[in-house]
Length: 271
Image (cartoon, rainbow, N blue to C red):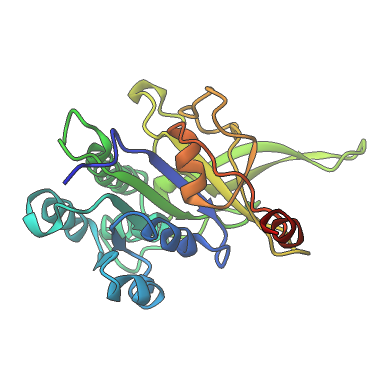
């Protein structure tokens, strides 16, 4: 077999619930046999067609131990040697379960700082072990690695219990008039942001947004003020179609197919 991936892309996709993150996995399955680590619990149902076609393998992961077992399975099982892409869906849910598992007492209102940090360290371990699969120095057959992350609305209040180290906060000014006040907003955080001492962990970070009027999906690829690993090569436009195969081709410099010819014009040309 000739491996088609010279080195793997490491991509984080964040978006609100229902924005179509799992649909991006379906796109990936069109070209590459894809392994899905399912923390969400719905991937097997949503990807049934791709599973039946032999283009997708799904493993349910509920906690850190199961996630690491799955990494070992990917590494050692010869039956998975033809996997070309790995997706973790949904990283935010896995994060919450890992952090909550560090809580000493179930009835506690929220984890302590030490428990949150311990949970974040475990999540980071899962993240880094998966990223190795994209590295040709680690594996002779590198894979694409895609992380899906639920992106809730920014919160003015404290984040919900269990989010732990998977939450960022920033000071913003609310309002544009003289009465404007500053507030702390909380939101989801991908591992690697603000962690410049560890280097660039992720190739790309795409925010999946949905136009409320047209329902059109778009990838926002620009630097978002939190993520220090965003490449500045200019390979991607600030906004790209929400087509995972399209943006991977652009990252790798694959020539883009010309846009389809309008039907009437095509008939005239064929005539």
